[in-house]
Length: 124
Image (cartoon, rainbow, N blue to C red; front, side, top):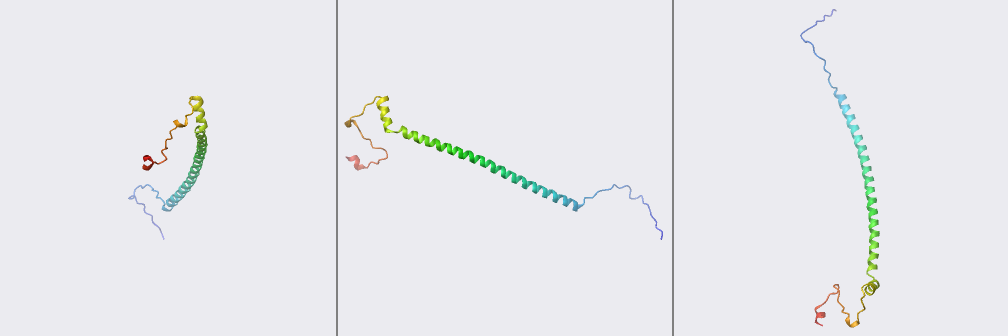
C-alpha cells in the first residue's frame, strides 16, 4: 500500500500557542493558598504572643503605679492624723500664735453640721 502525502499551502504560517493546563494551574493555586494560610497562621500566632507580652508590661506598670499610690496614700493619712492632733494644735496656738486659754465662761459650744437640730431644741 502506497501512501501519498499532500502538502497544502492554504493554512499558511501559524504560530504555536501554548495552552494553560487547567490541572497544573489549579494545583499551583492550591499550593499558593495553602502556603498563604500557613504564613497567616504563623503571623497571627506571633502577633498574639507579642500582644500578650505587651499587655504583661502594661499590667506590671499599672501594678507598680498602684503600689506607689497606696504608699503615698498611707503617708498622707499619717500626715493628716499628725496635723489634726489636738496637742499639736494647742502647742502652735500657745507658742507660735501667743494665744491664751479661754476662761470657762468665754467658751461657746457650736453644734457641728453633723448634729441635726430639731424645732424643740431651738425653742429652749
